[in-house]
Image (cartoon, rainbow, N blue to C red):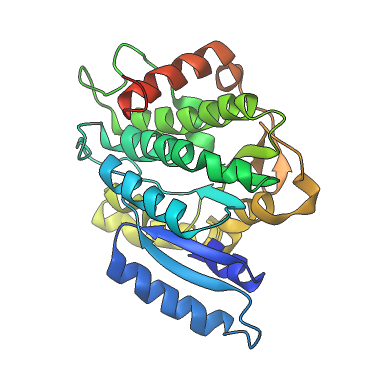
Amino acid sequence: RAAAAELLRMRARVIMGCRDRARAERAAREIRAEVGERPDGAGELVVRELDLASLRSVRAFCHRVLQEESRLDVLINNAGIFQCPYMKTEDGFEMQFGVNHLGHFLLTNLLLGLLKNSAPSRIVVVSSKLYKYGEINFEDLNSEISYNKSFCYSRSKLANILFARELARRLEGTGVTVNSLHPGIVRTNLGRHVNIPLLAKPLFNLVSWAFFKTPLEGAQTSIYLASSPDVEGVSGKYFGDCKEEELLPKAMDDLVARKLWDISEVMVGLLK
C-alpha cells in the first residue's frame, strides 16, 4: 500500500494486484484521497485481482494485463506470507514456498515479453534478511517430509534471491534489470501467524513501535529500485536501505539457482 501510494505520487500508473478485492478497493480509495487527484490526469491507481496462492489466478491476472496494457515499466514482486502453520496452496504447494517463490516465478515469466518490449524496464523482488537461515533442499522442496515454519520462510526468501540472480543472468542485454532487496522489520500484519503470549504483547507492541520501520520506511528500497536513476542498468544485485549489500555464498550459487529455475518451471507448468 505504501509503495503504491508513493509511486502514484510520482504520477505513475499503478496496477495493484491483490487477492482480496474489497480490501484492495478500500485501500485504493484511501490512497487516492491521501495523494489527491491530479487535474492533468497523470497518475492512476488500478485494482486487479491476483492471488499468488493460485496459479490459475496468476494466469488470469497476466492474461488481462497483456490484453489491456501496452507497456509495463516495473514489476514489483511483493506478496508474502510469513511463518504460517503447514498448509497448501490451491495447486498443492507448501504455502510459503508456493506464494513467496512459485507464484512470483510464474507471474514474472508470463509478463516477461511485455517487460522486454517496454525496455528499459525493471523487476524488483522483495526478499528478507532471514534468507540467511534457509537452505534449498531439492529432496523436499514442498516440505512433504518435514515442516518448520521458520525454516520454510527463510527458504522461500533465499529462493527469491536465487530467482532474481538467475533471471538477471538470462536477461543480460535485453534492457530489463532485476534486483532483490530486504525491506527491514516493518510494522505490518505480515506476522499475524506468529503467536505472542498474552502477557508479552504489551512489551512486543512497545518494541515494535520503538524499533520497527513504518510501512512507508519499509517501502523505500522497493520505490528506489523501481524508480531511481541511480540504479539504471544495475542488475542482479541485492539491496537494503537503498544501498547494495553483500550476500552469503549460498545466495550466489549459480548452479543451485539454475537447478531451482528448472524445477520451478516444471512445478508451475511452464515446462512438462
